Image (cartoon, rainbow, N blue to C red):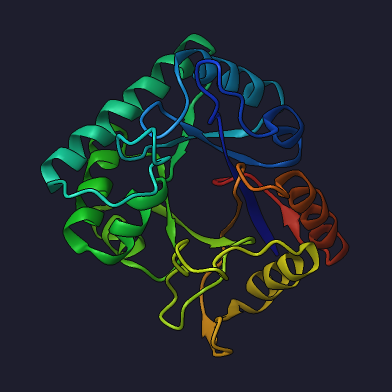
Length: 252
């Protein structure tokens, strides 16, 4: 049994420091790198790609909505055609730094509101997936398990990785609980570990209403901006290894 462990990183920009990338990157197998729209900038992109290369971590683009103030977590009224273009734009930004460091971009995972919108809206999911396919059909598309993100990417012809979350609670329909809700985020390490183990070993998760739901767990996400990100990643690695589960980069 194997699973990828990913984290959203490269989210500092300008004079604003963010997250513990230096400590987290050696512990994960895939890094989702902010591409400048919701967070990150050209300096941080360069540094994050270089750091991921040093630790042989899979590099992925983490394109978001153009919303620095809202960290890309606010919905926008935006057309599918424009979504296609903003995804292409951000993939190009990351690819430039991958090229100068002689590493391959491995995957793409939409960020925040773009991710949630795509999980619920077929046209948006299709636009995101089509942009990824047109840019490079060999890229692995990461999306929320059992949602339109995965089904649309598969229909286009992309290889997919179904994502589950260590630090988020689930609704009965398999969607993530909105961050507007008080119980959306898991802050307790033991609770996060137990959720991860159930998702990976049983392909199931308990929703916030207590209902057990099915899902596919190819890759586990820990949010890099979370207050407990480093602790979560460290302890989840230990728990998975203790269960004999191999932590392996996407596509590996």
